[in-house]
Image 1 (cartoon, helix red, strand yellow):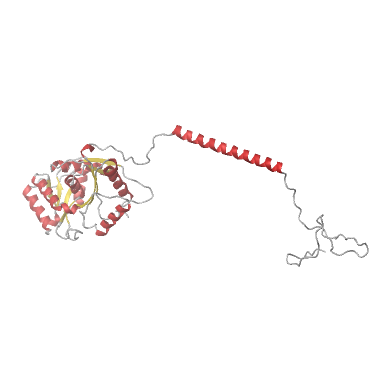
Image 2 (image 1 turned 135 degrees about the vertical axis):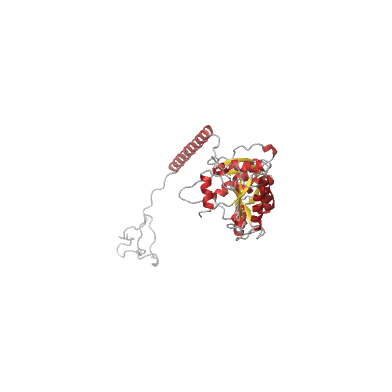
Length: 351
């Protein structure tokens, strides 16, 4: 009999029967005929194999279904492409539009990025430098300047200067020239002397709180009409950093009664003797303000288009006033919108 005790059992002496049912290998002693085993057939049932005709029919059906699916896919793709072509419109630029149409570009384009090295760059700086780089290197074959506005040694550090240089490189910005406002301290000093001599600037020792109140109420300083000689003498005391000189500042004599607060005789020079400058050390005891230095150096360095955020719009007339008062080359000013985010801080003064 066939043994059924598992795969490891020794093979039996049974031989297969044509019907598939195993029989004993020895004869019945009485009948001399093979006896059929009573053990049930344990061979798994094999399903009937499909005929060649059926296989051929199934293959034909599968091929037809595949062809139908491919045809539907092709039709869908063509329809989508046709729809996109039909609805294609001029590409709309999201956010700020760089193409603001600069004037007088036939004379050349020179833009500048003037960061103050008193902090790290933020996303607002990134927008400004990309905009200046676009007009200088993409829209026109121009020049991009990077000028560090290092006029306030109290807040500025060499660490920030190096960080700005590295960040510009990471953004792929390659200025054609790099300069420092401090390299023009002599020229700025001479420009201030010129304003004083022409009666367009004066020395003032009004305390800070009182000065703010006077400007707010459109009141003139008691020193506004001092003589040129007195103003020059006080400016020289400021330059020496003397005790008397440290209490004075120099104000531009524009219009104390203007509706534009930026024109109400802004301060253009102030003293600082306690903080050595990162580049000039203690050579200077007084420093120009950004509002005074920026238009002067823009003109001297050949800037053709000064791109400024709209927060400077009230100061644009002041910028032009300095150029006119000093008879310097004109610079076109173009405003662009600053970036505002909610629930976050971007100003380096608050970070």
